[in-house]
Amino acid sequence: MSFVTRPTSPQPTDQRLARIAEVVREMRLPLSGLVGYLQGLEDNVFPANAETYARIQQQITRLNGLLEELAALAPPPPPPESPRTAVLAQTPKR
Image (cartoon, rainbow, N blue to C red; front, side):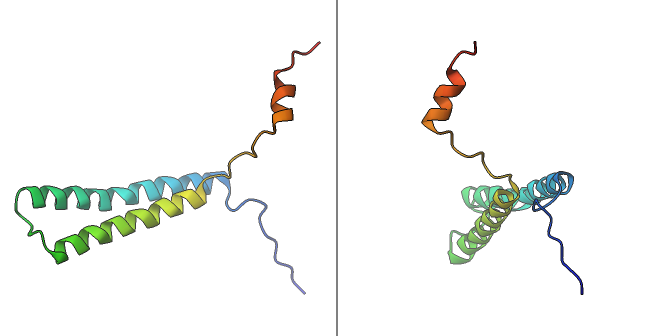
């Protein structure tokens, strides 16, 4: 019989940070594409038609996916502070 052990955190910190850096690098390509399409539209290099807008939408969709991946890699936020905890934290110690 074998048991599957699950890590207590989704990924070790070093692996998570490496993946975050990788995702950030991956974001540069769709951003560059968007800048290029917008400049091309302004300079009349690209026609303002459905095909061009579909390509822009593809880049936006890719960026949204990468942002979702970044959000999933981020550590969870700390729990909200209760009003009682906040008051106790501000009370001077004797």
